[in-house]
Image 1 (spheres, rainbow, N blue to C red):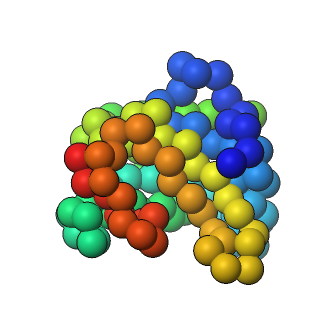
Image 2 (image 1 turned 90 degrees about the vertical axis):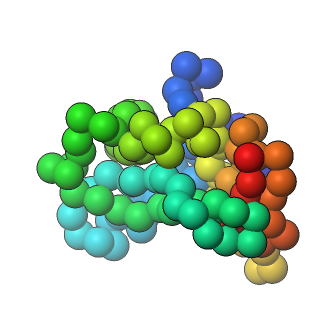
Length: 118
């Protein structure tokens, strides 16, 4: 895993590699978007990660905002209970590449790494 690019005070950490990849994906969208991260019921282990671009105008009072030099990660407070301390990384490996979630709150993780249990 590459080193997270933020201070330990941030609830969701983003590695430099993940930040570069997210910024590249956002540029392809052609809009100034933020990244919304959350959880939902489902997946092999009970809960699955959600991640998608969102318009900054959709940021609500229930959301926490984490800033990375002008790029914002948004997480609703309910999801943040399960994600606080999460490190989001990115790997371009041919097998098993993509976004990787390291969640200190998970007591079990699916083999695919996209779902977890608490």
